[in-house]
Image (cartoon, rainbow, N blue to C red; front, side, top):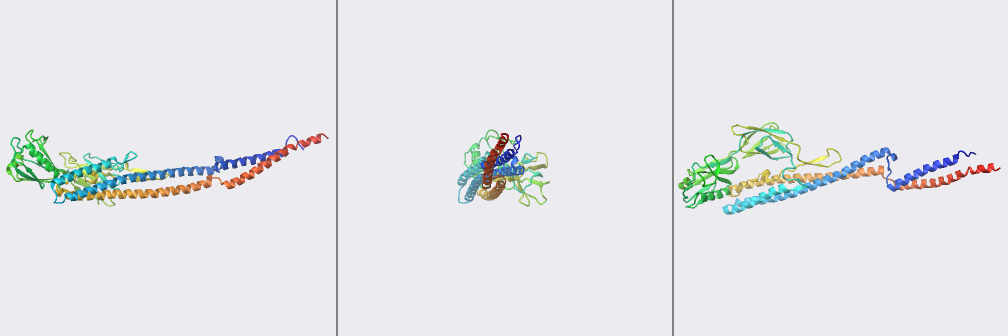
Length: 474
């Protein structure tokens, strides 16, 4: 028997410490609900669970991002649906104005509504926003830059790739411009007579001053989509009646489809207005372009006035507006490059990793982009032409809405997939991290009993040295 080292007590204390430590671990896991409360509990499991938790949180955020994308699309689609309703109303008015049973005054009233509806289409495109980001003014489409500042890219389809496209402008578009050969009479008054301007009858009462006659002609020409100005010999616009001037008639739109034809039934009235001839005629010209590098050999360019439309396979379509000064004065042609960039579209982060994005492109839904910014229903012919333009605009808007619907369907499937992936990862994480409460409680009970037994044994082991005293006492 030894008194310097109580080996039995040391052994009992060691086992008690082990069991106590294990019981504390069980208590920690039971109270936290996690099997891994510190890296030492399971180093490999801790590393795996951290990566899983990071991915789960990213997937949850990606699901929220996709839901935001759905909201963006719903906002844009709702606004475009109203734009479509407005264009449908404009087409209905065009059909009404094309009827020969109504008067020019009726068409003038219709045109007033058309102008207000055009303004509202542009207003919707300008003001439709989501979180202060404009959606319908072209801000959500790819950026384009043209080397010739006298040209504008008004539309690009999804089939247009991001690269440089070159073309050569060989003819500027022109308006139909008709200038009287003689100057108008500033002193006398007009004889009675009638002008016919593009089918619109203009009655000039006898005794009208030049200013009064000019006002009558100007108001009537507006119905025919023609501007009337007074110009001096230098071609500068002047106020009528202030100095010797000629009358200049010009079409609002460009191209060969725009014609000005003026007839007068009174030679004296023609002379008074400086028209000299009883019949005058002028026709505009379309722009001409040659496609270069970047465009496929199968691409074709069609021109209507100042609008060049390039089409090709796979839905390729690009619209380019060419100004009348695109070719500098004195030059025969003008070469230009159109750069289409990747920047511009809204990229929705729909996944947990870099590059897991969906590109959201919404083209401009303005009157200019839709080609309905210059329609004039003042004449029956103008109303007939407008019907076709509004039909094309309705087709284009329907395509945009269909694309937005496809975007939304994809995002909704993305949300379902991301949520499902997050659920499965959460289940896997639970198997690594979460405490099995029943099994852990069984262990806790076991260690608790062992700790109590160890405490009792340690107490008895500490009493063993007392037996040495009985030997010493003899």
